Image 1 (cartoon, rainbow, N blue to C red):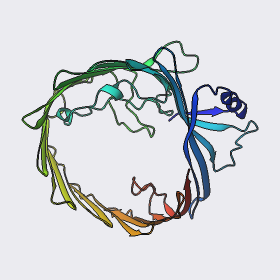
Image 2: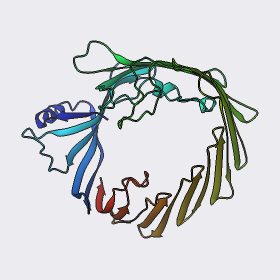
Image 3: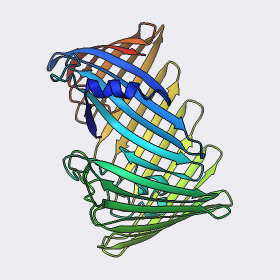
Image 4: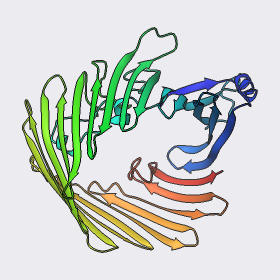
Length: 372
């Protein structure tokens, strides 16, 4: 996520461009107290611009606006407001041009098929706007669509730049029930996320995928060349009534060949179970229960890892959540809807984000939040 600082004088200048459709995309505010980190507050909203041109094209812009974050919105003598996720666009039925915090080419036309689940890594490096690794300022992406055919190309750029880095290309086509897609990235990609963890393909890579449905079964073929090795695979899944089963086999020229099996079954409207097993002896079993006012989810894995999460809707706007795992990283909380899109919550978590869906902070926290 990139951040842009805009002075109050510049905001006044934007207000003069009122010929376009300009709207604030709601907003949110939160005041909280945590017994480990103290008081915190924030105020944010979103801003969108749109203007239809005379030639069938539409010009647009959008940004998330952080008005205040543990301050009163006056972070410097110039009353700086922080803009995030800025995207400029020029679009039509035939395609578009995008600049800013926008998707790379491999992120719009290609996703790794089930056939490549056994490759050492099959996800393209679409997260290049990470300041601590790639040091990329913006993505420029062009798309062209004609019927069932689509192509895209993207590169990284910045203010004053005279060339592009982190180039990607993708294409897809629907050939009468058979979908063909391809993607490429150049050697600039490091595969790292914002935390410096290796999450995606490193360096130059090329991939192809073919998918179709035959006799009710979803079938896929995949090919990937990452410069160090190639992976070729087959994947399939089939659903009959409440049961879905799947399998894949991937042949790798350097790493061991890999295969896997998975299945999920809806026992009834309230209970569902799932299981998976892979050739490296890893496995996972999941059970979920969803019957108002209670939901419960349990996951077990081969390395003695497990976690359980539960919610209880007590009615009248009051909801309880709780969970823990094999490391006893417990969390629990209660939230109460005050009406008018205002919520009061009390939470406890042993560690930060003990449950990613709840996004709790370590310690005990009291929050008062508003949505506009």
